[in-house]
Image (cartoon, rainbow, N blue to C red; front, side, top):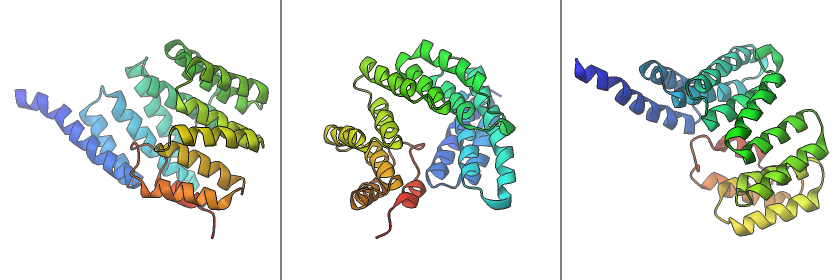
Length: 248
Protein backbone atom coordinates (compact mmCIF):
# COMPACT_ATOMS: atom_id res chain seq x y z
CA UNK A 1 0.00 0.00 0.00
CA UNK A 2 3.02 2.33 0.28
CA UNK A 3 2.81 3.30 -3.39
CA UNK A 4 -0.71 4.57 -2.80
CA UNK A 5 0.60 6.98 -0.18
CA UNK A 6 2.99 8.41 -2.76
CA UNK A 7 0.40 8.49 -5.54
CA UNK A 8 -1.69 11.35 -4.13
CA UNK A 9 0.97 14.13 -4.08
CA UNK A 10 2.45 13.03 -7.41
CA UNK A 11 -0.99 12.98 -9.02
CA UNK A 12 -1.72 16.41 -7.57
CA UNK A 13 1.48 17.80 -9.09
CA UNK A 14 0.66 16.46 -12.53
CA UNK A 15 -2.94 17.60 -12.19
CA UNK A 16 -1.83 21.09 -11.20
CA UNK A 17 0.50 21.33 -14.20
CA UNK A 18 -2.40 20.40 -16.47
CA UNK A 19 -4.56 22.99 -14.74
CA UNK A 20 -1.92 25.69 -15.16
CA UNK A 21 -1.70 24.97 -18.88
CA UNK A 22 -5.48 25.33 -19.19
CA UNK A 23 -5.38 28.48 -17.07
CA UNK A 24 -2.82 30.08 -19.38
CA UNK A 25 -5.00 29.09 -22.36
CA UNK A 26 -7.89 30.89 -20.57
CA UNK A 27 -10.03 27.76 -20.44
CA UNK A 28 -10.99 28.51 -16.87
CA UNK A 29 -13.88 26.06 -16.65
CA UNK A 30 -11.67 23.08 -17.50
CA UNK A 31 -8.86 24.48 -15.36
CA UNK A 32 -11.24 24.63 -12.38
CA UNK A 33 -12.19 20.97 -12.86
CA UNK A 34 -8.50 20.02 -12.88
CA UNK A 35 -7.73 22.12 -9.79
CA UNK A 36 -10.73 20.59 -8.00
CA UNK A 37 -9.13 17.18 -8.52
CA UNK A 38 -5.81 18.58 -7.31
CA UNK A 39 -7.46 19.83 -4.11
CA UNK A 40 -9.04 16.41 -3.54
CA UNK A 41 -5.69 14.69 -4.14
CA UNK A 42 -3.74 17.15 -1.98
CA UNK A 43 -6.11 18.34 0.77
CA UNK A 44 -3.38 20.19 2.70
CA UNK A 45 -2.09 22.21 -0.27
CA UNK A 46 -2.75 25.93 -0.01
CA UNK A 47 -1.43 26.46 -3.54
CA UNK A 48 -4.02 24.13 -5.07
CA UNK A 49 -6.78 26.06 -3.36
CA UNK A 50 -5.35 29.36 -4.55
CA UNK A 51 -5.30 28.20 -8.16
CA UNK A 52 -8.83 26.84 -7.88
CA UNK A 53 -10.01 30.16 -6.45
CA UNK A 54 -8.28 32.04 -9.26
CA UNK A 55 -9.96 29.84 -11.87
CA UNK A 56 -13.35 30.55 -10.27
CA UNK A 57 -12.57 34.25 -10.28
CA UNK A 58 -11.50 34.39 -13.92
CA UNK A 59 -14.64 32.48 -14.93
CA UNK A 60 -16.80 34.92 -13.00
CA UNK A 61 -15.11 37.92 -14.62
CA UNK A 62 -16.07 36.66 -18.08
CA UNK A 63 -19.75 36.10 -17.38
CA UNK A 64 -22.33 38.53 -18.70
CA UNK A 65 -26.09 38.84 -18.98
CA UNK A 66 -28.09 36.19 -17.17
CA UNK A 67 -24.91 34.19 -16.64
CA UNK A 68 -23.92 36.79 -14.06
CA UNK A 69 -26.11 34.89 -11.61
CA UNK A 70 -23.59 32.06 -11.85
CA UNK A 71 -20.80 34.56 -11.17
CA UNK A 72 -22.24 35.15 -7.69
CA UNK A 73 -21.89 31.45 -6.89
CA UNK A 74 -18.34 31.40 -8.24
CA UNK A 75 -17.48 34.45 -6.16
CA UNK A 76 -18.62 32.69 -3.01
CA UNK A 77 -16.62 29.60 -3.96
CA UNK A 78 -13.56 31.77 -4.55
CA UNK A 79 -13.86 33.25 -1.07
CA UNK A 80 -14.08 29.80 0.49
CA UNK A 81 -10.96 28.53 -1.32
CA UNK A 82 -8.89 31.61 -0.52
CA UNK A 83 -10.00 31.41 3.11
CA UNK A 84 -9.04 27.73 3.28
CA UNK A 85 -5.62 28.54 1.80
CA UNK A 86 -5.01 31.12 4.54
CA UNK A 87 -6.15 28.67 7.21
CA UNK A 88 -3.74 26.05 5.89
CA UNK A 89 -0.81 28.48 5.68
CA UNK A 90 -1.47 31.54 7.87
CA UNK A 91 1.79 33.24 6.81
CA UNK A 92 1.45 32.53 3.09
CA UNK A 93 1.71 36.05 1.71
CA UNK A 94 0.13 35.21 -1.66
CA UNK A 95 -2.84 33.60 0.07
CA UNK A 96 -3.28 36.58 2.40
CA UNK A 97 -3.05 39.05 -0.50
CA UNK A 98 -5.52 37.06 -2.57
CA UNK A 99 -8.07 36.97 0.23
CA UNK A 100 -7.44 40.66 0.95
CA UNK A 101 -8.07 41.60 -2.70
CA UNK A 102 -11.32 39.66 -2.64
CA UNK A 103 -12.62 41.41 0.46
CA UNK A 104 -11.66 44.85 -0.87
CA UNK A 105 -13.17 44.38 -4.33
CA UNK A 106 -16.08 41.94 -3.95
CA UNK A 107 -19.59 43.12 -3.09
CA UNK A 108 -21.15 42.05 0.18
CA UNK A 109 -23.59 39.74 -1.61
CA UNK A 110 -20.73 37.31 -2.30
CA UNK A 111 -18.97 37.85 1.01
CA UNK A 112 -16.79 40.90 0.49
CA UNK A 113 -16.10 42.49 3.87
CA UNK A 114 -13.99 45.60 4.36
CA UNK A 115 -13.47 44.84 8.05
CA UNK A 116 -11.97 41.50 7.06
CA UNK A 117 -9.79 43.36 4.53
CA UNK A 118 -8.49 45.70 7.23
CA UNK A 119 -7.59 42.77 9.47
CA UNK A 120 -5.83 41.03 6.58
CA UNK A 121 -3.88 44.21 5.75
CA UNK A 122 -2.42 44.15 9.26
CA UNK A 123 -1.42 40.51 8.86
CA UNK A 124 0.21 41.27 5.50
CA UNK A 125 2.13 44.21 7.00
CA UNK A 126 3.42 41.99 9.82
CA UNK A 127 5.05 39.74 7.20
CA UNK A 128 6.04 42.31 4.53
CA UNK A 129 5.84 46.00 5.39
CA UNK A 130 5.95 47.14 1.76
CA UNK A 131 3.08 44.88 0.73
CA UNK A 132 1.22 45.98 3.82
CA UNK A 133 1.51 49.60 2.68
CA UNK A 134 0.12 48.69 -0.73
CA UNK A 135 -2.78 46.99 1.01
CA UNK A 136 -3.37 50.12 3.07
CA UNK A 137 -3.33 52.16 -0.14
CA UNK A 138 -6.02 49.90 -1.61
CA UNK A 139 -8.19 50.46 1.46
CA UNK A 140 -7.74 54.22 1.18
CA UNK A 141 -8.64 54.11 -2.52
CA UNK A 142 -11.79 52.16 -1.68
CA UNK A 143 -12.78 54.96 0.69
CA UNK A 144 -11.72 57.64 -1.83
CA UNK A 145 -9.04 58.89 0.56
CA UNK A 146 -6.74 59.89 -2.28
CA UNK A 147 -3.89 61.70 -0.41
CA UNK A 148 -3.58 58.85 2.06
CA UNK A 149 -3.63 56.27 -0.74
CA UNK A 150 -0.81 58.06 -2.56
CA UNK A 151 1.22 58.53 0.62
CA UNK A 152 1.07 54.81 1.41
CA UNK A 153 2.38 53.93 -2.07
CA UNK A 154 5.20 56.46 -1.78
CA UNK A 155 6.20 55.05 1.61
CA UNK A 156 6.26 51.56 0.09
CA UNK A 157 8.61 52.81 -2.65
CA UNK A 158 10.87 54.51 -0.08
CA UNK A 159 11.00 51.29 1.88
CA UNK A 160 11.60 49.02 -1.14
CA UNK A 161 12.82 51.20 -4.03
CA UNK A 162 13.72 48.20 -6.22
CA UNK A 163 10.18 46.78 -6.16
CA UNK A 164 8.76 47.44 -9.62
CA UNK A 165 5.25 46.52 -8.47
CA UNK A 166 5.15 49.41 -5.98
CA UNK A 167 6.16 51.88 -8.69
CA UNK A 168 3.69 50.50 -11.22
CA UNK A 169 0.94 50.84 -8.62
CA UNK A 170 1.86 54.50 -8.10
CA UNK A 171 2.09 55.22 -11.84
CA UNK A 172 -1.34 53.68 -12.41
CA UNK A 173 -2.78 55.54 -9.43
CA UNK A 174 -1.52 58.86 -10.81
CA UNK A 175 -3.01 58.08 -14.23
CA UNK A 176 -6.40 57.28 -12.70
CA UNK A 177 -6.30 60.60 -10.86
CA UNK A 178 -5.69 62.43 -14.15
CA UNK A 179 -2.11 63.36 -13.26
CA UNK A 180 -0.86 62.22 -16.63
CA UNK A 181 2.45 64.10 -16.76
CA UNK A 182 3.61 62.56 -13.48
CA UNK A 183 2.31 59.14 -14.45
CA UNK A 184 4.00 59.23 -17.85
CA UNK A 185 7.35 60.25 -16.37
CA UNK A 186 7.25 57.34 -13.95
CA UNK A 187 6.13 54.85 -16.60
CA UNK A 188 8.83 56.07 -19.01
CA UNK A 189 11.50 55.73 -16.34
CA UNK A 190 10.34 52.22 -15.53
CA UNK A 191 10.33 51.32 -19.23
CA UNK A 192 13.92 52.60 -19.55
CA UNK A 193 15.08 50.75 -16.42
CA UNK A 194 13.15 47.54 -17.17
CA UNK A 195 12.91 47.38 -20.97
CA UNK A 196 12.14 43.65 -21.01
CA UNK A 197 9.47 43.57 -18.31
CA UNK A 198 6.04 42.69 -19.80
CA UNK A 199 4.29 43.96 -16.68
CA UNK A 200 5.57 47.45 -17.44
CA UNK A 201 4.39 47.28 -21.08
CA UNK A 202 0.93 46.08 -20.06
CA UNK A 203 0.41 48.56 -17.22
CA UNK A 204 1.53 51.55 -19.32
CA UNK A 205 -0.45 50.44 -22.37
CA UNK A 206 -3.53 49.85 -20.24
CA UNK A 207 -3.49 53.33 -18.70
CA UNK A 208 -2.86 55.04 -22.03
CA UNK A 209 -5.70 53.09 -23.65
CA UNK A 210 -8.14 53.74 -20.79
CA UNK A 211 -7.47 57.48 -20.99
CA UNK A 212 -7.55 57.44 -24.82
CA UNK A 213 -4.13 59.07 -24.88
CA UNK A 214 -1.11 58.37 -27.09
CA UNK A 215 -3.07 55.58 -28.70
CA UNK A 216 -0.38 54.49 -31.22
CA UNK A 217 2.01 54.06 -28.30
CA UNK A 218 -0.64 52.18 -26.31
CA UNK A 219 -1.17 49.80 -29.24
CA UNK A 220 2.57 49.25 -29.60
CA UNK A 221 2.94 48.35 -25.91
CA UNK A 222 -0.06 46.03 -25.85
CA UNK A 223 0.90 44.30 -29.11
CA UNK A 224 4.38 43.67 -27.71
CA UNK A 225 2.75 42.13 -24.63
CA UNK A 226 0.66 39.87 -26.88
CA UNK A 227 3.76 38.68 -28.75
CA UNK A 228 5.57 37.70 -25.55
CA UNK A 229 5.08 34.50 -23.49
CA UNK A 230 3.30 35.20 -20.22
CA UNK A 231 5.75 35.93 -17.41
CA UNK A 232 3.70 33.75 -15.03
CA UNK A 233 0.51 31.66 -15.31
CA UNK A 234 -1.45 34.29 -13.37
CA UNK A 235 -0.13 37.25 -15.38
CA UNK A 236 -2.65 39.47 -17.12
CA UNK A 237 -4.35 37.24 -19.72
CA UNK A 238 -3.92 37.99 -23.39
CA UNK A 239 -7.66 38.56 -23.75
CA UNK A 240 -7.37 41.58 -21.41
CA UNK A 241 -4.62 43.05 -23.56
CA UNK A 242 -6.64 42.43 -26.74
CA UNK A 243 -9.70 44.14 -25.23
CA UNK A 244 -7.60 47.25 -24.56
CA UNK A 245 -6.11 47.52 -28.05
CA UNK A 246 -7.07 50.87 -29.56
CA UNK A 247 -8.73 50.72 -32.94
CA UNK A 248 -6.54 51.66 -35.89
